[in-house]
Image (cartoon, rainbow, N blue to C red; front, top):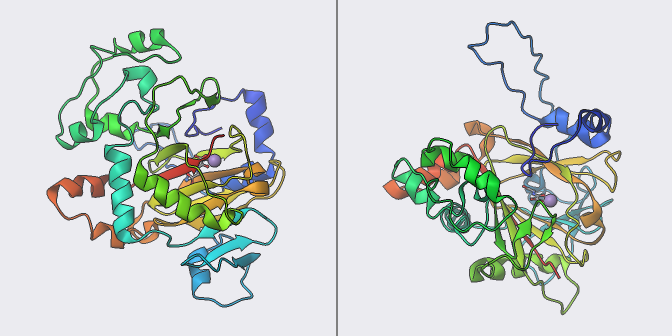
Length: 349
Ligand code: OGA
Ligand code: MN
């Protein structure tokens, strides 16, 4: 199985089994096939399947269409919400809000995702190896060779040994380390080794602005009079060949509460499957500024991101690019030109 953001390893037998599922077949259909390295002497013939995007739902397109929409798309009646909200006829609890964020808001949250969200006490995928890293983005920006390795710090997680061993590795330049950033966690910290929220880990509350945004955007999926309580968030950072394998997020107590999932940066294909991997998933585009809500039954559905698009035409970040103009912001633009960021916000209890 291709490396997922969560780095789950599967045995060969389990991997072979996964190949057989409808979800896996869809992942293979949309994934990026890398060309063999030019240096390689061996003649490897990789037949790159032609990418067939005909069945990918485009909710942005639906904004300008009138019903009946194609491919099971329905308009959700949200009288007290200020923009169009769509759903899928056979996926109750799934909501898609195209263009939910203005360009300015997108820029703001991209900046926050890179500069403040990976800061301690928030943990990232790098924490177990390097200890807490302060201002990784700033260091990368200044193109300094960065090393936090002499002092792995006060990391209290899964494997102190791993941390110490990794200190033997030569220092890694901050720019390289930034490219290795795959996720960070906000609010209550999720412990991937235990697969639960570890309330004893030090954490800050979800930033006020993000809380406010999530509450507002969650409202189409909430019952009248109820308010969403953002308690934890996972920020995913996707490079050009990264994907997120099919999974269900099942560690939160109340599945009637939505997961609010914000897309930033390059366009991607999002797959929404059924309750088993055998169900054929539905593919849809997620673009910068789109928001997906998964609540109720949709929370039990497998989902994942098999592909991000970084070529200029397909990435659809032109309007974003015009916003990052200063020297400082240019570095953010360079990053986001071939990256996607996803912030997904959850109510845990
Ligand atoms: C997740 C997730 C989806 C995305 O982090 O659990 O499903 O769009 N992310 O990146
Ligand atoms: Mn998920």
